[in-house]
Image (cartoon, rainbow, N blue to C red; front, side, top):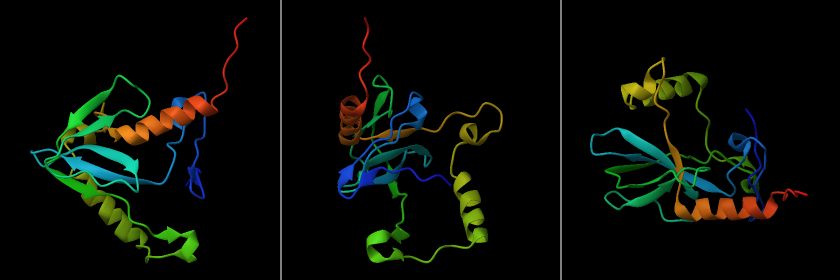
Length: 154
């Protein structure tokens, strides 16, 4: 496992890289899986943890973390909260019993069956989308612009 620092006390922070896939998304977040009317997941949405969760039947703007031109309006038929707090340093560490390795495997196998076949196939799978809401997207890009060194051309 790799630990990526995204917040120091109450201040969100960002790790910058020349490789945009290595740039961290700042702040304490919550993740939601948004489902379509066919019962399959459309995408996973990240937003700040203090924001109200997306609601069934209410459209939400979903933005690609790095490509400003890739965005969409999703009206979820079902919303599932994905994160479950198991470690809280301010409360002394583990706050919820951890599942066994067998329980984790069984859960992962069960969850993978919820996705469409084109996402699950071994050869040329369709990439699954992970998006940011507008507030997190705006904050991330403002922080990125503020923290990234400016190149000078002569």
